[in-house]
Amino acid sequence: MSGPTAVSVEKDRLAAAVREVAAVRGRGRRRSVTVATALLVAAVAVFGLSLSVGDMVMPIGKVVDTLLGGGDGGSQFVVLELRLPRALLAVLVGAAFGLSGGVFQSVLRNPLASPDLIGISAGASAVAVTAALLFQVSGLALSASALAGSIAAGAAIYLLAWRQGVAGQRLVLVGIGVGMGLSSVVWYVMARSDVTDAQEAFRWLAGSLNGRSWNQFWPMAGALALLVPLTALAAHALRPLQLGDDAAAGLGTKVETGRLALLGCATALAGVATAAAGPVGFVAFVAAPI
Image (cartoon, rainbow, N blue to C red; front, side, top):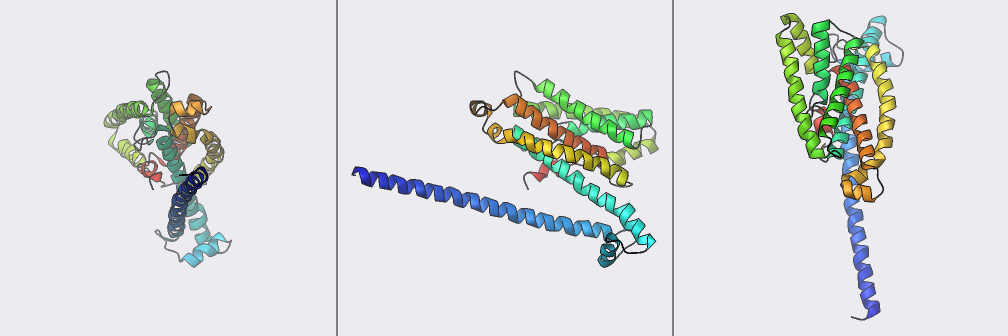
């Protein structure tokens, strides 16, 4: 094969490979847009339904009219003071758990690396339940104790998994072990407490938005306004880290600094969500795969 012909064939092969890669990426983007659009429509529908359905069922038209400033005093109280803050808080809690789970799974390259499986939520539960049952803590103080517990558990798991760096598999295994230990603390404290108090603690452990109001929404909104941009900023190191530590270091990424920043943001996101609604399971685990 002559020189010019060989060069032409090689160019054709490269062009075909580029077209194939572009087609695959295009299909992936179209699928992501389709799934995201469907989930957004479903979320809006459920959001509207949550404002309409309850002990006092209201037509969706009346709900919209109330949101726009109309309606009588009763409908304004039900929609604006009771249902709206809970619905908005549900969206923020879901976003925080979902983003936290996505970061954990991406950084550690493990689909089991979710805050409710590797001990982060268990740390929040252990501290919150202990504070509630032994020291009668409630309200915002209980939420603060849950946040402190999640951060403390995340720090402990990171330090225990440290061996001249942190490997994803080791951190997951350490996190599962720590989570089991903290869960035993929760059940021990509940077993030693009054039945009525234990039932209240169990209700919190199941995760609930019951009784939540604007007093819980605004701190959650403020926390996400800070944590989401920080997570986006830290995510610049995410793509190199997904190639492995050696490849990331070869590309000039500060591996441990980038990993610690991302894990810190993910832990804080899970902590504030748990503080607002309790240790809701499964959301962080399935958000990224979906």
